[in-house]
Length: 573
Image (cartoon, rainbow, N blue to C red):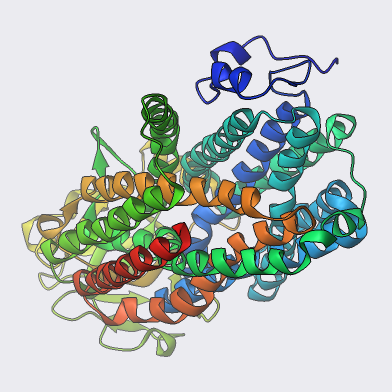
């Protein structure tokens, strides 16, 4: 493959070719994207598809399969994301001083693949080990891919800054195409085939990402490890001054990342309990709503690039700090939308969800703690029926009660009979008004239904009935899921203005010897946001009304917006 422009380069909406040709008299022979660009794009697409796919179902995996409560699940998610964004510091140091960017990326992709395989093992120890490997792999390689791509443009397309900007925009677009595909696919795989099979999908994608990236080595920038520091010696002290100046901007970005990353935890929990998730006549799972963020990125990123290019062409060049300032205002507005939806929704109450192949029944809470039900014969529900079973078992790991044989006895004496975990063929006809009045909600199919038979066949050890504690809001008091979709729209616009701008700003202002380190510092803001803000704050989510919780975040965003305005004025001077 020769290093020639791609035939579509002239149609690249992110590249102003006329401006690039006008800028310098000593342009290189080629003005299109170098060949290595396509390996960066496809490799990053597969890697981000892998990462966001795994992350999309991780919070529900913790609560549903590992028995972690929502507060702790939010904290674990925050700590995991923090580790993913702390380790870029290590990745920058290793690449800049020891292995180089290429071999750092290839070497640390191995634990990444292993972690994707292990995370599906339903054991807390294995999952913690897997998350450590995933954080190591994702974190260490993260700053080096974008930096190596930037260096490739500096070497192979010197002077074409707009082309490099175009590449970063396409790079960000590839990230979100991968995120959209995986975030919309993983919930389906989880529902149809279970968590273990679903986690194999991102493992396969990460393997593909490694192969694609490794194959492009000869098309990347030539690296001379440790030599850059010597080149920068004349600028010695000033490079640390640069880092100090942008550090103040980067520090305030933490509130954006704190809000953005809660979309993988508290936003899912909120949608799962308080929202009517019907869209276009179908029910969308709470963890699949995340895909709208990536979808909106794909729609609005090219539009934003075209907008700012057009404004620059007519003499209105928007500064990076101005873009970020608008992004902060939108971030606060996004939390205002979520807070309004939270206040508009009804109050949650504790309930019990009974699940079996025939469907689900929502009952009032039990009069006893779940942990005391092991081996108990009769379990009364508050203001409702009594469960009589001969094989009740409490699973400490996932905090659920299971049984296979028993009956749900209602006040009128009628029963729902379970045999080998399945309702009898005639039981469905007994759901009369008296029985339904003792249930909060029910969705039951006859045992002869094809979906029920398929569910029975998928059960490895035969069908069972599970009981689990849930937070429950009456259907009539749930708010439409479109409120969260709108919040994602606002948050996505903020992301374009803050994250895309900050990523390139980190590369542009960094001295040559600190490209990897400064990019890692930008990523460090994500880590600190999750460690210092989200890890403790998400513990409050189960204790507060969601409207109050999201209003608290909106208020914090407003305060930081004011601070950013003052810091940006100083930075621009």
